[in-house]
Length: 126
Image (cartoon, rainbow, N blue to C red; front, top):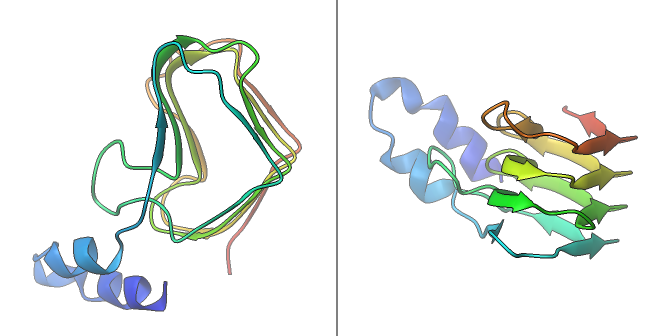
């Protein structure tokens, strides 16, 4: 994660490649008909910097995802956001901690997402 921070510090050269290489991690994308139950999980070194739709936890155009949730989980030292909800409704994001991430921690992508609940989440940045 420190290599990623250092690469961002050198981004003013106009060359994004060092950032993309240093800030590259896994991502979990949930699409239509997904039912997601994540609880008491840890997500670290996830996401891909400067890449759209490569977030640690990402509901992507899943439509009605009633009953899906991420709760009581830890997300830290990630390369892009913590939880993204895009084109998806009725997801519960509760009792999570997001610490030291790049970009918005909890993110509704288009503003058309409805019925989602963000409850008692904590975002901390050093």
